[in-house]
Amino acid sequence: MSQARLVIADTERPEYRVRGAAGALERIVRWTPGAPFRVTEEEIERFRASAIERAPPTFRARLQRAYDAMPFPRTKTPFNNIHLDADGCVWATAWPDPESGRQTAAVFAADGRALGALDLPRRVSIHEIGVDYLLAGATDDLGVESVRLYRLERTHGCRPS
Image (cartoon, rainbow, N blue to C red; front, side):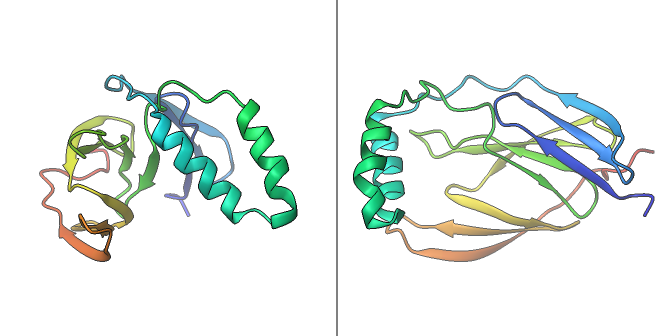
């Protein structure tokens, strides 16, 4: 239980907080993200359409009016997801570049040290990160989804020396 911890992140700020097994704050880790990507009208429309489609039919018109009145952000948050791997590293994944599809992950050691950034394959969604692998869902150019297993070769571990 000495390694138990909780990593909490709010995507509005490039930071995460680590709490120990008893709930006490152990550290706050902050970093400087890349330039933010713009939120496009197409993304807003896809979001609205998807949310309205999933809503109960009796609620759809009301939801549409609410979305019509709602302001949407102009830029995306500094990162879109955070993962804790099997070795204790924290991975903060950036939004994919809308033009190239390129996506990166900032990787931090268990003690908060920045280990570097990793380029991720295009159109992947991370499901699990082991000591020597990354398990992800991938979507090809035709929208077909598949499961991919990538090998990781680490130059150093995530635990403090």
